[in-house]
Length: 251
Image (cartoon, rainbow, N blue to C red):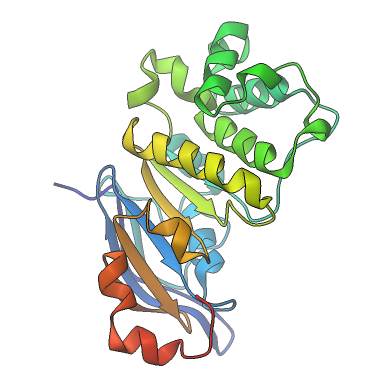
């Protein structure tokens, strides 16, 4: 079966400095792969390359077997690459429903953008249906993260089957960053539901292994821009190379 995402020798250098160095990684249909490593390991840079924010200086990126390495971000999004960022990106004076409608319209799903029931249905999937008319400024940080997930899912109702349309690949860049401890459980459960119930393929950067243990099928460890190890969470944490590389450091 063709992987949803296939990276081959993916590299990015700035001058003489190599930030992402020869990454080979295949992510299968419906798989959840977590990317871990200390600050500066190249995790966000990897996401920038996959989403099109940054162009690679070497290697290739394929989505469903098609080369997308030269496509700009908006065309990758149309192909099914959805991404959230480390910093929350919502408009304080816009309603929760307005965010979803705007995201749907931007993705070309005009029918969804104009359908109040469709917008609310998307919000229900991330447990924000009851906040549809509220301004984003009034949301907790955890709820803002859920709203960003809803914006990724916004185009899905256009095809009439929410569970089988929308992003082919969800890139989640530290979704738990800044989220209050009491909100982490529900946000984790929302992400788990999107992955397991809807079959979303997920690539997620996260620092906390306790969160990933209940989510990830595989863990990819980055170190100095390279992949140090890839495997199940238990296998990766037991890997002597990983233990040696991260003695005294927090993953």
